[in-house]
Length: 99
Image (cartoon, rainbow, N blue to C red; front, side):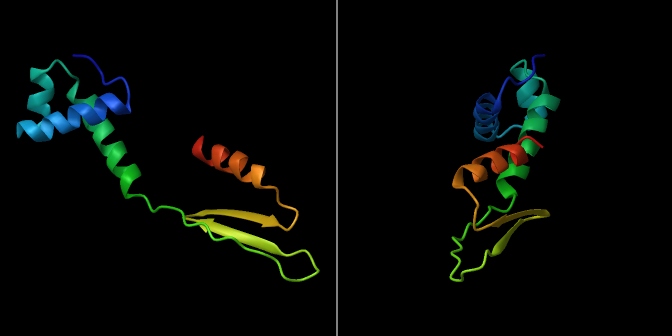
């Protein structure tokens, strides 16, 4: 039995499982796929798709003093001030994704 290589293959197999109407374990066995591998992909995809999507709101300071802004996404907090550079957001998001 071979393991699923990537998300594209997992999604393709999961679609075929649904179309077949057969249980995942049975379908996987019939097609030489490791059922545990496919089921793990199924759970990870479902978890990712059900996670709350971040909502971004542009904040603009109207005062002369430097303001601080906090963004909460789940249990993650990002704080920036008026000297914040937009490129920094890309680095912050990349760092969060790697966790």
